[in-house]
Image (cartoon, rainbow, N blue to C red; front, side, top):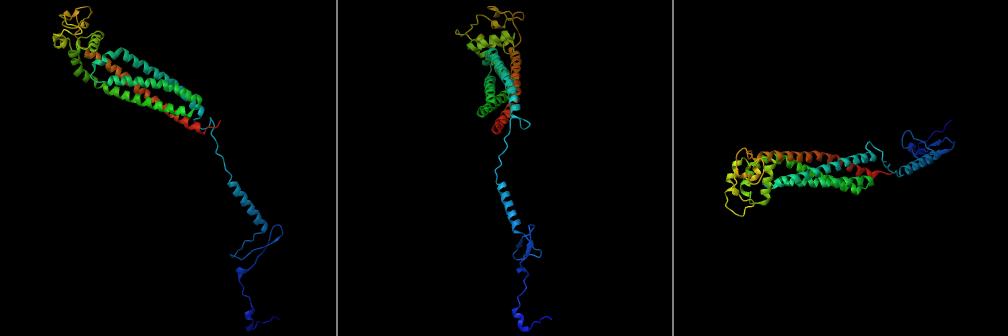
Length: 325
């Protein structure tokens, strides 16, 4: 028979607290482990061996994550545009660059040597400025081509950077010259109509440079006077009584350079069988327009090439920084 508790025995009974229970669990190795207080309804029993294993694993993982991973260096043939590919492309570009620079120098020198004598007859310096600016671009192009070949061959990033700036200078000069040439080409006719006749009438026989230019122009273009041969009747050369003229009149009606067959004193007669009746403004206008179109086409056309060169040189400059042989 069981023992019944009396009312006075309740003070000796220890309260039942589920949170204070100590659970005993068995591990896979057969050892017994104890857990602390119960924190939930379904306690998880973890052995000391498992706890030690987990701690070791976490420590191993933490050490593994702290290991420094070195970045992979790119090789010469990595990526779609490798260093070798860009180098070969730049060599081809530099060859074209050198040829274009030589063409620019040749065209501008031809313009200066054969057409520079007519520059003194123009009222503005646009033609002279454009010609010499294009000549400067040609010289920079030759220098840049040689510099680019050295920089690509040596793979020197500093030389490549300087080469890029040279390409930028050539690009800007060619853009300026091309734009100036096409803009001036539309204004040359108006300028010649307003200034050429005055130059003929006021400076022939007075200025040596302009006198030679006018005589050369009348012989080259087979013309006489600025607009027509009658213009000479109103010139300082014919109407002036000055004795210090470079070429005295001596009874001539037109300069000897107006004659179909130029001989001494052939300008004493101004008949159509002896002199040209066409004015020089038409031949000079066509000639200057032709040269301006050439200069504009060379300037704007070759400037597009410099863009590819700058892009290639910048790509090679960046890629050489990360390449590991």
